[in-house]
Image 1: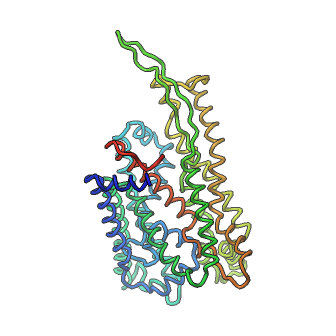
Image 2 (image 1 turned 135 degrees about the horizontal axis):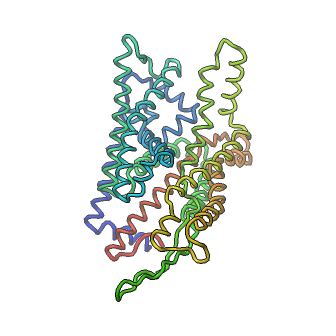
Image 3 (image 1 turned 90 degrees about the vertical axis):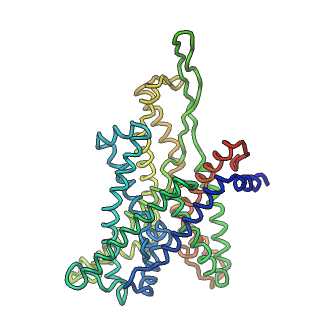
Length: 441
C-alpha cells in the first residue's frame, strides 16, 4: 500500500508527472519508428533467419525489437553501447582520456562526446555487417538488392545511411529521456523494447504450452528476486577522514564508507560472452558449402556446436561470463582510483595504510565479493539450459523450446531489473527532495 501511495505522490507533483509523461511519449515515438521497415526487405525470410540465429536475437533485444522488423532503427542503440565499451577498454591506455576522467563533470562530458562521435563509425560498420549478412541469408535473400557496384550501389548506400541515421535518432531520443525525463534514456529505450515483446511471447504459448509457460514464469520470478538481491548487494568499506584545524575552526573528522557492489559489471559480461561465443558460428556459416571438404567439415562442426547448444556450449558460456565479470569489474574499479582519491582528500581505511596498501586491500575485497556476482551472472546466463533440464519432467508430449518460450531472456531479465531499480532510485530521490516517502525501503 505504501508503494502505491508513493506512485500517487509522484503523479501529484506537476514537474515529476511531466517527466514521466515525456518519458512515455518518447518511448511511443521509438516504438512507432521500430515498425517502419526499410524498403526491399523480405519479411518472411527475415522471420525464418531470426528463428535460427541467437546473435540476431541478441541484437534484436538490444534494439528494442526493431531489428526483427529490420526497421529504420534496426540497430537501436547497440553501436553506442559498443562505443562505450571500446572507450572504457582504451581509456587506461590513453593518458589524455585518463586525465579527462579525473576532471570531474567537465571531463566526463568530454568523454561522453567522444563516445557519441565514435558511435557513428560503429553504426556504419554494424550497418554494413548486418546488411551484408542478411543479403546472403534466406531463400529468397532477406535483402536482394545489395552491393557496392552497378545498380545496387545506390540502394546499398541508402540502406547504410538510413540505418546509421536511425541509430543516431534512437540515441537522440535516449538523450532526451535522460535530460527531460526519468532514468537513463539509452537503458529505458532498451527496456521498452524488451517489455513490448512480452505480450507476444505470452500469446504464443497461452493456449498451446500452458505447462511450459507456467514453469518458465516461476523460473523467471525466482530469477528476478535473485537479481534484485545481488544487484543491491554491496560491501561497505569504512572510511575515516582526519581532522584539520584552520584558524579557530576544525574541519573533517567524519566517518563514511565506500560501497563495493557485488555485481559492478552489470549485463556487459553477458553481452561480451554471447557475442564472442556465437561469432565463430556466424563466420562458419560462410564456409558450410566450401569446395574444400576439410574446411566444410570444420565449419559444419563449429556451426552445429553453436546451434545445437550442447552441454559443452553452456559450460563454456558459463566460464566466459565468470571470466568477463572479473575482467570488467576490475577494469571499472581501476578507473575510479579510489585509493588515490582517498589519500588526496585525507581519508583512510582504519587499520590500512594509505596509498598502495589501501589499493591492495580494496582490490582483494573486490575480487572476493565479485566471485558471488560472477557465479550468479553465470547461472543467469545458462538459465535456458537449466530450463531445458526441468522441462524433461513435464508431461509426455509437451513440446517446449526454452530459448523461445522464456518470457524474457536471461540477459533481458538483467536489463529490465537493473533499469527498473535505477529508475525507481531516481524517483525516490525526487520524492525525498519534496519530503515525500519514497518507493524503496
